[in-house]
Structures are given as structure tokens and as C-alpha cells.
Image 1 (spheres, rainbow, N blue to C red):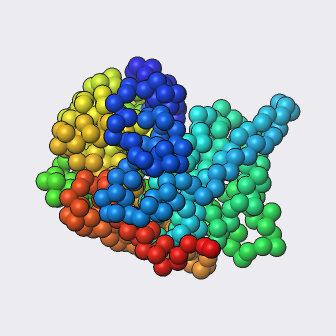
Image 2 (image 1 turned 180 degrees about the vertical axis):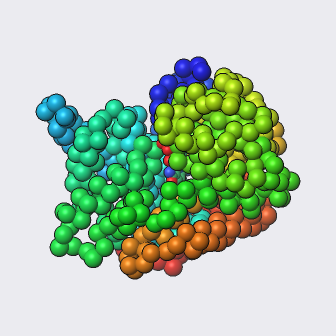
Length: 461
Ligand code: NAD
């Protein structure tokens, strides 16, 4: 695999990095300019992820005549928290770490969103992801706002005991900024249920005389410690629920349809497994270790087992090794990006040979990539709809924690399905009303709810 594709586990593409640095492939600038960027002093770099994500929202806001004050409120996060903290390493030396928590908006409820543990996480990434959470929670109808956070750390380079100290020390650093009624983090790339358990335990310790449900400060916990059944697979389940709703009108039958998946971590592997169980065929998969293909179908369950043992898809038997170009060009019905942001740029969009892109990852398609897809008649199911299953079941976990309940899997899956169907319906209605693409329609669906909340609440003072 070329180094431009994927260098390390959870590493970003060289192209995405160079775009962040302003040396991108160009072509993004014209379409993502907006007077509000100048008014609010946004980065002039058209390839800046935060600028790109907000520009998609502003398109929808313009279309539905959202008042100017709501556009500027939603174009900025409420709070951007950065912390630096020391942690003792196993060799006795201390190292400083940087952590983030961005609280984008809480008009609809407490801030909600994951924590990314990644060596290359930046404030703009976290701001974009927090912004997307506000939109996602609003669209899917859970009573939360949007937040996101992270630690600049490569979790795969630290021992378990070092990670425990890093995670606990980060929790202490932000403990006064989070809470079950105020801001509720969750897992994201690089973080897992064990990390969530340490956060809940540290927070409970620090707030011992505080609330009655300290473990509700975080979701995505292990089932044995306040987690919900069905949370681990929830994002993949939501992607499949969305596809089940949307594929018929695109003329694709899930049974027998061919699928390729970019990224085979939590979201990618669960999407693959559930799709296969529903009759689809996984033909090609690529992650940071390489790309594989089998036109007769890759066993999604066996591949998940393989990646959990060896850390990536490379070396999987019963499939051929292919390169990046072959991966993107493989003829499939559905392509699921489930890795990192900005991976579907113009060149990848030109190569894709599919009918539908179902965005499992957050912001995987750049505006330029999207224009190419649109021009080629490829339908994009946007992330704020498609991957909303994770936050929805996180909400169920929070409800269970706060009401001392324990739901069974059937109940979780049924409730999730209802939320996904309703959200898909909202997107469909907006598309009909405004005659726009699905991404703009999804933002319209999210913004309608936010507009109603602001109209009713008013603005203080
Ligand atoms: P993960 O860490 O479990 O998996 C990430 C996957 O991306 C891995 O398979 C990794 O190999 C692959 N990857 C990383 N860099 C790559 C590269 N350069 N080229 C190819 N593959 C690469 O993360 P996840 O939880 O599955 O999250 C994936 C995406 O889904 C992220 O955008 C995340 O924000 C989003 N998301 C996750 C959840 C959730 O519940 N986990 C919910 C909503 C959205």
C-alpha cells in the first residue's frame, strides 16, 4: 500500500495532513466561502476541516432562511477547553500531555460527544466533530447538544498502566467542565470501553458527595459497569438501519448487494458484520495496514476476529491483496467510509465505482469530493444521519443509568431503529421540500429543531 494511503494505525493520510497545513489539492475554495467566515474570522484555508464542515451547514441555513443570529451562534462552539497535564511514565519520567474538550452547543440538552485519543488530534478536528454532534443529536431527536474532546496521544504506544494514568489525569483536568447533567463524553477513535470505565471511576471519586449517578457522566462503558447492551455495535447498526430505509428508493436491494468498507474498526467491522447477516456481500476492505478483496465475498465475522488479533486487515486469508487504486475502483453497490475525516477527496471520488456512499465516519467526504460524487450521480448518505446510531444508544445508556434500568438487546435495537427511521424520514421530507441533496436535507432537519428551540427559549439577556 502506498504511504499516501495510510502510514500507521489511526494515522491520517498524507494528503489530509498536507491539506490541513494549507498545501492541499485546491478546488475547495470557491464553494466553501461564505460572508459569515469573514465576519467570524475563520481560517482562510479552504481545506480547513472546521471551515468545510460549517460550510455544509451554512448552505442548508441559507436555503431555509435561518436568521443571521442563529447562523453565527451555530458557526462557533460555545467553549473551547484545552488542558495540559503531567503524567508519570512507567520508567519514572514525567511527560506533558495536551487534552481538549469543545462544547459546541447545548440549546437542546447537555453537551454530548466522544473523546478521540490520537497522536495527531488538533483543536480544529475536535471543533468539527463537536459541531457535527450538535447537528446529529438534533437530527436524530435525542435531547443533547454537541461536544467532543480528545487527548493528543497514541494509545497504541503506551502500556495499559500508562494509559490508565493518562486517562485518569485528563479526567481530573476536565472534571469541573463535565457532568451527567452538563457534558457527557463517550468513545471515539482510539478510545474504548475500558477508558470510559476509568473516566467514570475517576469522576465518581472526585464527585463523591455530588450527584446520584456519577457513572452517567460518560457512555460507552463496559456492560458490567453501567454500559448498555448493543452500544458497541450501535453505530454500525445505525448505518445498516439507514441503508435499509434509503436503499429501496435508490433501487438497490440489500440482499445480495456488494459492499466495500474503508476502515475496519468499531464502525466498519460492525457495519460489515451486520450487513453480511442481512444478506449483503463484503467485497473489499481497506484499513491502515492494507487493502483486500474477494469478489465472492469476504467473511466479515472472520475478518473482525483477524483484525482483533493482528491489528489490521493485512494478512487475511481467503482474499487477495490489492492496492489503494484497486480498492477505490472496485465495483460495488455501497461504499462505506468508516475511518477518518477528509479521506474522500476529488481523486478518490473520481475512482469510486458505487451507487451509494454511506458515511460511517465523521466528515469523510470533502466538499470537492462530494461535488464529484454528485456529478457522477452517486448518492451520499450523510454522516449526521448515517452514523447517529452510536449517540442514540449512548442516550439509552444514560437513560438506563439515571433510572436504574437495564434494557435487553431487543428493546435497544427496536428503539434505535425507530430513531433512525424517524431521522431518515426527516431528511427525506427536507429533500422533497427544498429539492436539495441529502447532506443539505439532513442539515435542514437538524436546523429546524434547533431553530424551534431557540425561538421558544429566546436569547439571554
Ligand atoms: P476505530 O479506531 O475503531 O477504527 C478506525 C479505523 O480506521 C481502523 O480500522 C483503522 O485501521 C482505520 N484507519 C485509520 N487511519 C487510516 C488510514 N489512513 N487509511 C485507512 N484506514 C485507516 O474508530 P471508530 O470508532 O470505528 O471510528 C471511525 C469513524 O467513525 C470516525 O470518524 C469516528 O469519529 C466515527 N464515529 C464513530 C462512532 C463510534 O461509536 N465509535 C460513532 C459515530 C462516528
